[in-house]
Image 1 (cartoon, rainbow over the protein chains, first blue to last red):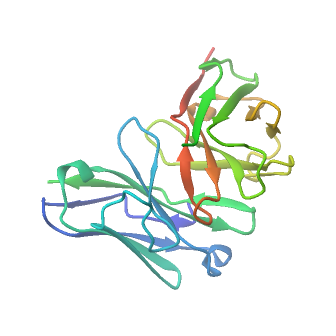
Image 2: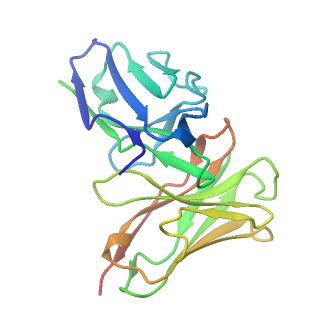
Length: 111
Length: 120
């Protein structure tokens, strides 16, 4: 069972805004570590969307935004497009294992 | 532009050892700013961190895999490797290599992934 909890699925119509939550369930992870977000299209490697809770790497559209408050983080996607249909994962650091932990993933369906 | 490429057998028999190598090009593996990482994804499931290795050879592993995993680095070849012993069908997955450290604790660079099937 993942210590980062995401909803299994979300959906939205083109042009709408959706949010994906990522809730920390461990005090190790909740101790101020950053949350990062990835987009994974079918058959491809994950792509970094948001790092350090709310920063976009070069080339990521500003339709994607992130936030973190306490032990909960969110990814927001505005102006939803068909090509946004993908799996989305949150990731953070677990000091108890000196390594990374991923959320279970959320499948975004564009209606 | 940094590139990572996994290589190794696509089919491994149960109880045997899975071995994969990640070749790094476009940058040196021998840098203090980064960790080199293996992550796997069983078919239809989520991402699972396996472990990290530093250029010095210091490694950290997921506790549930620690007894079976070795991650090593070969700076002369600019590559790092994964060995997972006593495999079972549960180890069937796409195995990714990645670099940790470009933006804090996130993964900017990934390999394309290598599907390893455990089957007799």
